Image (cartoon, rainbow, N blue to C red; front, side, top):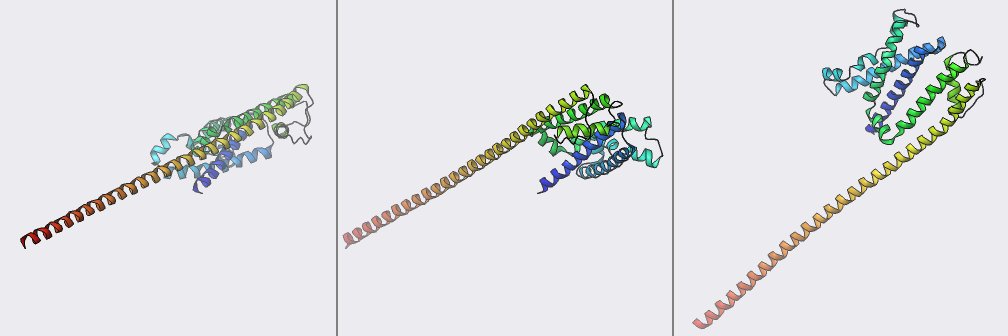
Amino acid sequence: MKHKLKMLMEVIFIVFIFLDGFLLFISIFLPIRPTAFTLVVYLDLITSILLIFGYFIQMRRQKKGLYIKKNWNAIISIIPFYFIGIFLLGMNETSLLLKILSLIKIFALAFSARQVGKSVDEFFEKSRLVYGFAFFVVVLIFCSVLFFLLESGVNPEVTTYEDSLWYVIQTITTVGYGDVVPITQWGRLVGVIAMISAIAISSLLTAATTSSLMDKLREDREKLAKKSGDYIKELENRINDLESNMAKEENINEVKDDLNHIKSEITDLKDLLGKKNE
């Protein structure tokens, strides 16, 4: 139960870290609506608070100075630069300094994902789900950015990066609401790439999940076989001990019988000697 709770907490950390890093990247290089930018600021603040909590828990298990020295990036990843700069210091959201600091934080978040999500990271590597997830992220970023560059200024339905991201997400998930459609040939090509990639992503995730389950079943089978083997050895040892004890008891009985036989012979000899003396 404790391990499952730990895994759940780490998954929450990983999700927030990924979303925060992705949205920070978008806010730095691509245009988004003011309302969406405000959501990015607050999401970054929430992620920073969660990381403070996660690092505090881990720091309690180790020496404080040594932990900070090994995880220097934690100091950067827990600072909500946008929130401090815009809401507390009154800086402009287009400030070059804020963008540079946010870009540095993205790299720090990448290290933080491995530090606060060690169990999840090990599971992803062991189950090979990391390949499907990485492919999904690459397709999502590549297709959404390329679609925005090709359709913005030409397609009235694509005015910000959010429109492009929305189109790619509903294409990959095969929802297809039809509220955003490509009007250029290159934009349609991007849509085709997203559709084909969706099939590949589904296949990769299905194969990785099946492989993970098979590995888990094989591991459980091996553990059960080892446990059964150990139990059989234990039973064999117990049987050998019992046989040894039985053998010892039989020897004792034989010795007792020999002693009794010797005593009877001595008694007979005494009787004979007694009769001769009479």
